[in-house]
Image 1 (cartoon, helix red, strand yellow):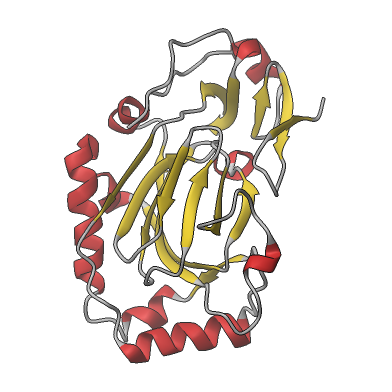
Image 2 (cartoon, rainbow, N blue to C red):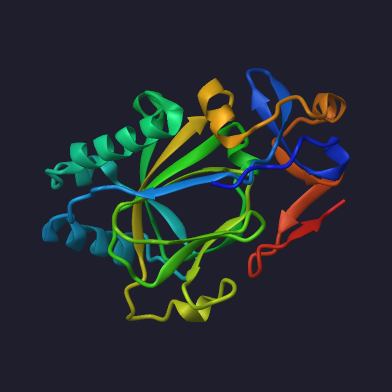
Length: 246
């Protein structure tokens, strides 16, 4: 686990502005990434075949696409579904998050790689917990700014701040390149994803989040966003580097 340095004024650090009830609130962006590997049985062949059909025919995943799969349909073909969820819940409990997963919103996702991005413009009030279900296909989950690179294998589980830039890239690559995901090569990863409320005290402590770091700016905003050094910022999709937009 890596830890953030001491909190600094908002103009000298990343700041996430997120909806908290009816108001925008400010917070730090954590560089802490919790990760591990848990026991996840191999999904049955008929379930993985169903995922393959859905990603190829309905979703038509292109390199870099991240889309939602039907969780209800999958559960009917997935005898070990509860075991997978329980494994993730047990692991997060060991990280000090207690029963947080039990009340969190859950989705089944698929990606064919993912370019560098952050999710703070839509999920600034959350952290993600992802449990990967596919075999090792030579891909890593990369957090360039935070300095974490995690091989994706069946049972890999991570918890991270949605405002932290991340991507799913080829293991030998230094960045995202669509050519690393050629047609006819299976590089799709399927994963369960939970949205965890960032204001939960246990989660904030685990990720070393500081709140209300820039109230004056928060008061004048009307949408979620991430700022760097006192101005709005975006992420280069190929390298993960921050770029100021204002």
